[in-house]
Amino acid sequence: MSYFESRLRLNFEDLDSVYRVLKFCEKLNISNLIIEPLNNPKYFREEIFHRIREDININIFFRFNLKPRTLKEFKKEIKFYQKFPYILSLETQVKEIQIQATKDSRVHVISYSDPINMKTATPGLISLAKQNDTYIEFSLAPIMSKNRALQSKNFRLLYRFVQLLLRMKPNIIINGNFDILYDLRHPRNLSSVCHSLLGIPLDQAKNAFSKNVELLLSKVKARKENKSIQPGVRLIKGEKKT
Amino acid sequence: MKDERQRYILFKIIMDDTSNLNKKVLLNSLWHSIWKYFGMKEANKIGLWLVDLDILKGYGIIRCSHTTKEIVISALTMIQEISQQSVILSPMKTSGTLNKIRHYLR
Image (cartoon, rainbow over all chains, first blue to last red; front, side):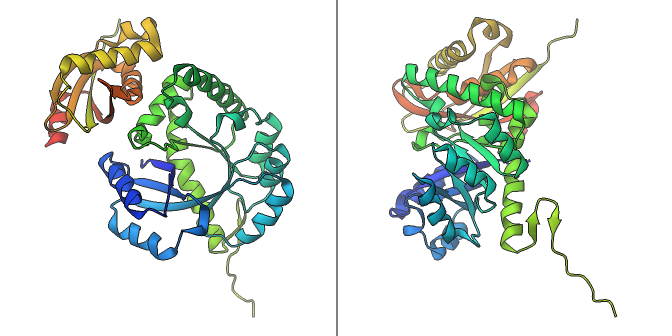
């Protein structure tokens, strides 16, 4: 089973720091990595992407994150991601946008990486995400806070959110999303943390770091190749009847 | 009653300056982490033993009971600082025998 660190935010303005972080990931034996370029597509170019893939001995994938403030802004922004070849996630506190994004097949992941956003999750929304095959994601970065009071508060928020997810059973993706280099951890170890500290069954925690991410990537790939329309439905080239 | 089985956990040490690191300091911070996140209820089941610590090569081996393997891995993962220095103790391999761990190291 290969594990994924499914969210690592890197600033592509400074390529040296990008390489430093990636080398550090190699040191940690992380084999699969999904990078989110900061400043979104502004500094991100395809050639950099290919160069990094060649230089680093890690399977690298990319994702982009939308942070709209209003529903109008979201609708305007999503138009540019029609045939998007990478993972697209959404992170917002506005419930209307979350509902709209959950219904929209262009958005693959609804992200609750910020503990404040977790409070906005409702059973209805999670159920809608499950129906539409949209992934729900959360991060473990808040529990690595060095401020003990904040760490304890974040643990409580995460625990409540996890209990909601376990009850509703949507497709879950868990990631580290660490900003500081020395906060980075191997996904296998993070699955142990999820199991022992947040009460997620071990197999589910492992799946959230591996199998579910693989399924998401295959979903994105199928969509890119126009093979997939809806879950379980795909176009096949039929022979003409003579 | 079934006998308690043991697990050996190999972990990697990633730290800028390892001059302050020794067995005592490492065990102290590990116990501190176990106490902080799991408390007395879990700590008494662990049977923790530091089998080996090679600071130069940057690895260590810990022995614990098989039921508390995930707890020890979590406690190692949650350690962020030792002697005011950032550190990563990253569990790499778990096994029921020390031989297999040594074989993996080679």
